[in-house]
Image (cartoon, rainbow, N blue to C red; front, side, top):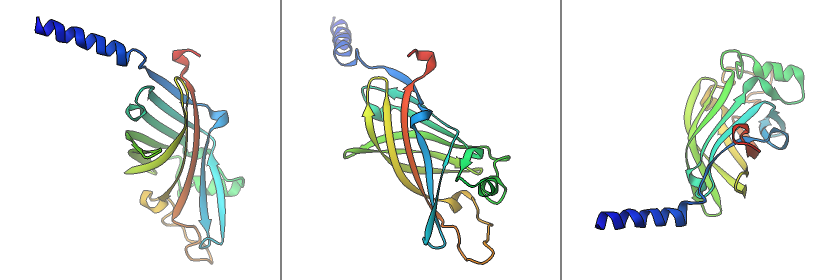
Length: 196
């Protein structure tokens, strides 16, 4: 009898607190999302800005507890675009991203935790054949039932991933800065297999 009562209580609680919970599969809205970067040049005298044009965000979104959501980012390295074709081709070469050998930059999220009015995303970032665990702070600018928008500004050391470690400028030492600014804004939409 006690077991039956406990089971009944569990059903009632689930109805009260879990009825609206749903895991929604979300993809990025590419027309309103950006994966950008900022590279200091010649000791910070100037900066080069660029972005990746081909990327995808996959999210299993928990609309009740955002911190239980799962995320995965995939960037096609060859889609790098700084506005100068020769420079972009050089960045695709073995001197830097070596895109033929390492075509994708992949982030596999392992946890999300709330920090004050923002969040921190932990996971494994794989770039240029190197995988490292990273913590990425971000803000959620929208947490709806079927839409999420996030923005982040973060820094990583390109040499930690072996990007451009052998490159030497012909006349300026440390021409390319090691600390690369990463600026990402994602707006999501419901995955096609879950309807509009």
